[in-house]
Length: 189
Image 1 (tube, rainbow, N blue to C red):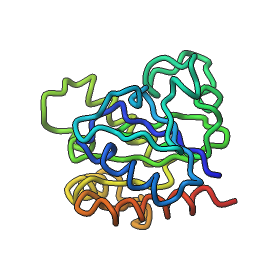
Image 2 (image 1 turned 120 degrees about the vertical axis):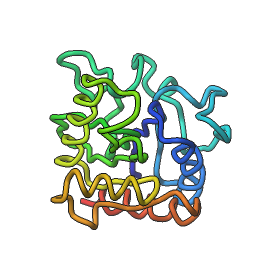
Image 3 (image 1 turned 90 degrees about the horizontal axis):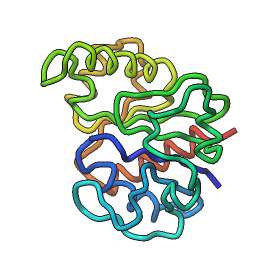
């Protein structure tokens, strides 16, 4: 069994909410725990998330965990707080440091890699750049929602191996297959 801590707390449009049910149905041996607690009737954009046997909310598996993945208390052990997952799948330009065992997958929207524009102030852009840098160093795979997100990531970090960048967003079933394949490969001993 592969255990995934799946962050749905940051904006990447509807892709994380659309891809999760398809991926969960493809391989029921993969256990997903969602952060924050969205399976209690909540939803990210649309569509609502269905109840699936191998998908649970953080409230069900880690009732003492409050907030999103990026709100780790000082000195906290993120992996223990998340139930010691094999993979932490982050949705956005954030990547924790000093993981002991868990591998990292990151989903990035076009805006995740756009440091020049938008309504972000200098402090927000600096935090975003730090998160992207950590992800560039530690992530095993990037799922970029659209070619523009992948292009922005490659321009910012040309040293990221092309095999680590997967463009998604056009075909949910094909994206789900690529996601499950990546999880299996990354989690393999």
